[in-house]
Length: 224
Image 1 (cartoon, one colour):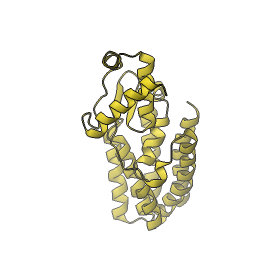
Image 2 (cartoon, rainbow, N blue to C red):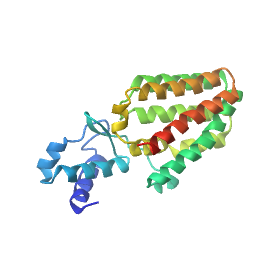
Image 3 (cartoon, one colour):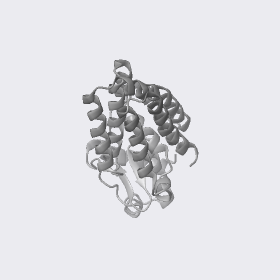
Image 4 (cartoon, rainbow, N blue to C red):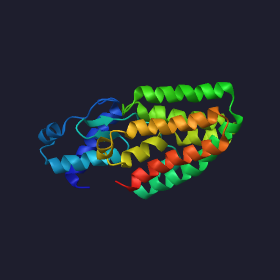
């Protein structure tokens, strides 16, 4: 990262962490940052890219960059820095969460199923709002792990926290969702498949649906 980009990153990071730019708020436009810092558009784009990689903002083509909620990082996730680290995190989640979903299909209570349903409804409702969708997505996966009836699954997912959702998202090409307008619809459908299998008490389908969902996310990380 160039020295000029580093200065912009540090200044914007300070504004985000201090609350001067609140979660859900839009970053100043590229033109505004060029004018404010007296640098080129290339430098500004480099700085914004670094903020994405740090999990502080999410960028949507044609809409700008938005500040994300800042969940606390757990010690393990603090070391997730590279693209390879994120791919390995996804491999880990595929193994763990697929089995948790299978157990949830076998063991879930009516109350736990309601919790999964509410989380799914919340995820549908917030849509692609970058400030809220990470939390809603995480809650769905957490509720599934709770329904497994095994506290080690739910404790692990809870410890990973929303960063397990945020880190892959910040590594995805921001152009991807604009090129693929059905992206959100497909992710919601993948969540619905997981929920439906758990509701039917079908462990094998729940395991498969979760594996498909997380594998699709991993595939998107390698195809951009």
